[in-house]
Amino acid sequence: MEQDHGRIPRPEFPRPDFQRKEWETLNGVWGFSFEEPVFDREILVPFCYQSKESGIGETKDYQKVWYQRTVTLEKEKLEGKHLLLKFGAVDSQAKVWVNGRYAGEHEGGYSAFEMDITSLVNAGENEIRVLAVDDTNADKPRGKQSWTGEKFGCWYTPCTGIWQSVWLEYVGSVHLERVKYTPNVSELSALCEVFVSGTEDVMVELTATAQEGRLFLGSQRFLCCHGYGKTTLTFPDLDIRRDQLLWTPDSPNLIDVCVKVFGSEKISDGGAQVEGRAAVSAFASQPEDVVNTYFGMRSIEYSNGRISLNGSVFYQRLVLDQGYWPESILTPPSDEAIKRDILLTKEMGFNGARKHQKIEDPRYYYWADRLGLIVWGELPSAYEFNDRAIEASARELARFVERDYNHPCIVTWVPVNESWGVRQILENTQQQDYCRMLTYLLRALDPVRLVSSNDGWEQVSETDICAIHDYALFPSTTGKYEDMEALCDGYAESRYLFAAGNEYQGQPVLLTEYGGIAFEKEEESGWGYYGKVKDETEFLERLQPITEFLICSGKFSGFCYTQLTDVMQEVNGLLYEDRTPKVSVEKLRQVFGRPVMTCG
Image 1 (cartoon, helix red, strand yellow):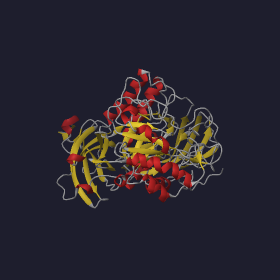
Image 2 (cartoon, one colour; image 1 turned 90 degrees about the horizontal axis):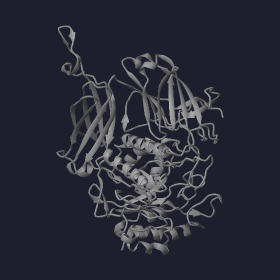
Image 3 (tube, helix red, strand yellow; image 1 turned 120 degrees about the vertical axis):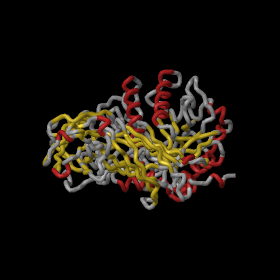
Image 4 (spheres, one colour; image 1 turned 120 degrees about the horizontal axis):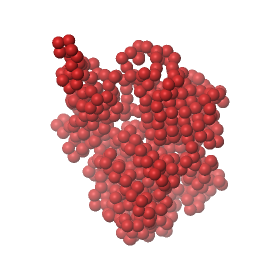
């Protein structure tokens, strides 16, 4: 297919929670080839070659793919700056060369990475080459990408190579690498930690505002030593209502923070340059780096078997969302497509989404932050248990938390789903310890969110949530939940809820997968759970009573309906793949959005 060289897909800034003014997108047409760097084709980045949007649409598995792009850099922009080459995600291993010289590599198909290529570029034309290697090994986080060479069950077409945005950022000789905000709602404060490149002492300035800059919240400076510094932002004395600062789905208030990094000015002593800490007597008047960030004042916790948001009991109405599109697979085709999915989710009565087996495009979390949708962040599963799977999963999970920690929409982490990759976890203590390790890793990295350790069944005691998957829930089978203590010690559908040697300890109970209802008019090769329904009436007759039971019985802290859209051969979505609703959105809202207060 001939490419449109004037088209720049996904032109918006890729990470709105960490944004610099000086940047350039590298999305668009790149040279491309399979196996060898001959570049006999063209591809539209950031779409994988398996997708129609890429201009190729070849579904055969290739282990190696090559990319080539020439970039023209202006001398004025390079002067006094460092140049960062950034990748949103490349599945699953990437090696990068700039002007024929090796720039670096990265392993992990769902995580972002960057390289400082300042020493490798010059004013004028520069060539970037990328080799992506994506084998069919099952001992790495794959998520819903098939490893057999064909689609099967609930596993779909793989997504090889570059599948999120690529861009350049111009930064100072010292620059902000990361900022981490940990809110404390009870004290109306937030711990701010900054991570800066290099080891020299620098001054960091924070300026916080709200209501899109109309409300000034304060400004402060602090010293950052050896690449790290921290301070506490406090807001209790402001002449505003508390609810004007807190983030909820109904009032998604965000706090914007402009972070400036000031490098030290070296002073002389009798003509001799003074080095080290003694030289840091002053800081430059102009910042080396300026980054616009944000976070949300939000708490999520549980007690007495109930989950609370900002101290108030909060019932979660989630939909399972796999983030696939027919034309672009894992890559959202546009920013508007992301926004539309979130708006449709809310219109159908949900207040959240469980992003299933995918670390999503950062702009999904951005729109969830702004539009008010809670999100469960889930690690894509590996499917073979060995040391490589353990290492790769822990690494990708840590990177996930690092990149997306500041998004208030994310309230729960899911490190393992349905014992995928740990099929012997019921009795195998090593696999149980793996699940515990990921749970404790999350708690160490993130003390302010909940963890669903092994979502669905065979959970370890350390989980914060008792998450149940039950597709065999029908209006006639709700009685199985009459004795919740007994059920939590046993099973809901077919698998024990807790692994051997582990037990339910009073955690909130959520039915995190149910439904999955398909229609008879769907293609015969497609499937749903436990038979299909004829029409909207039969669909609602099956859905409404079980959802009413989940909301009104008082036994659950929330639910997650499977699923938002059809995905390839799995045709049990509320929407078709093109996002056309199968059932009246208003009728779905009446079912999923029924207020708890109307029960009884």
